[in-house]
Every structure is written in C-alpha cells, then in structure tokens.
Length: 196
Length: 88
Image (cartoon, rainbow over all chains, first blue to last red; front, side, top):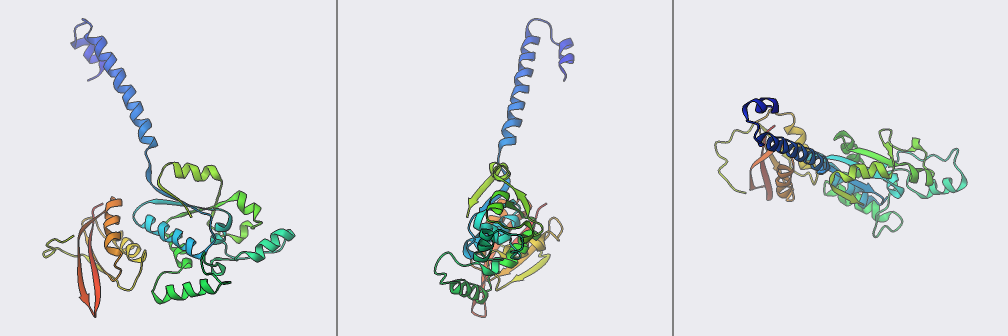
C-alpha cells in the first residue's frame, strides 16, 4: 500500500505523521542494510606469493586450486621472489648489469626453484620433485596451468617486477598487472587472505 | 558420516585412486559440473585427506551436497568413497 493510499484511508489525527516517520525509518534501515551487505566478505580468497621457494609456491597453488574448486573467486598476487612463479623464460638483452646479474641468480621458471629448507644448491629441490612424483602428487607446473584453467587470477606486482629487472615478456602471457591497491581491493572483500 | 546409501541412484562414478590433494576434489568438481542438477556422483579415492576435503567442499560450495561417505578395502588399500549430489 502506498503512502498516497494511506492518506485517504487514515484520518488526519496524527497517525499519518507516524506512518511517514516509520516509512523514513524503514528507508534509512534499508540504506544501512545495503551498506552493510556491500561490506560483507564475498566467496573470495586472496593470496600474496612473496616467496620464490618451490615448496611455498607449491602450497600457494594447492590452496588456490582447492579454493577455486570449492567455488571461491581466487586472486593471487606475485611480488618480489614470488614473481619467478610466473616466469616462463630468462631474458638478458636490454638489461642493465645489475638486472642481468639478478636474472642469472634467480630461477628462469619454476623448474629452477629451490626449496626453503635443505636445498643444498638444488639437490633438495630435485629430491622433493622425485618424492612428489613417487607419491603421485601433482607438480607445481601442472598446478599453475590447472589454476589458470580454473579461472584463478594471477596478478604481477608492477613495482617489484621493475625493481627486479624482470621484463614483462618473461612472465606468463595471461598474468595481469597490479599494485598494492589492486591487492587490497580484493583482500578487503575476501574471507581468506594469505601471505606466502 | 554413515547412513543408508542403498537405494541411492548413482549417475556417474569417478575413480581417483592414487591421486593426492587437491586432485580428487578438482576431478570431482570437473565431473559434477557436467552433470544435471539432482544427479549423484560417486567418487572412489585412496586419499585419506579426501574425507575431510569433501566435507569442506560441501560446506563451502552452494552447488553440491554430500549425501554420504563410506570406507572399504580393496587389494589391501583403504578406499574412501564419497557420494555427492549436484543441487544447483
């Protein structure tokens, strides 16, 4: 029933003023409810991948693929050493000396990553890969492709990419570009956010 | 979770024996999205963690329901069996 209809049915003895006050209060509550709803976390998971260690990156992609599988929107932000997880090749041409050195000292792709403990110049990483194969655990390379198929967004941090001297061409072609606000915008409406 | 699962019509069966986390879940999800609403998927896994994983999936996702889980033994290995229904 509209207010105009009420106007004709309710006598003007002050009841109309009460109805109007109530209508205003309902409208104010509805506005507040909409505001609260817009601030509720959504079915989203956000992961910052800072580490470039094989085991940590593996954990990040297992969580990402699991979250995507159970219906969450997943965004992964790669910064500093984590950018190596998005790398597909190593380029030296056109880089400064320090950038060339950095490129030579960091893995060209996930295959060159070490482990966070007991790496022993890469022997530890080889051992972990062998043990994962024996136990039929999906490799990190397969998991990254799987995450891409599942619609996981992969965002590279522009600032750290520039600092590390990584050329955009060295990264996966489907990697997005963003900064801290891009991460925060997603993290603020996520139920889960992780820093790995 | 134990309940009477006899009389349950299984639409599709998925064998993920040997696969480890997160693959049983990923494969099950890939399978169930191809099925119709109301259909039941039976998943046979050897991954012990899949018991809690399938419970977590049903709890977090709004499109599936876990009807039941059971265990059996084949060739000396424990099988973890999950019955999942697509609900939307």
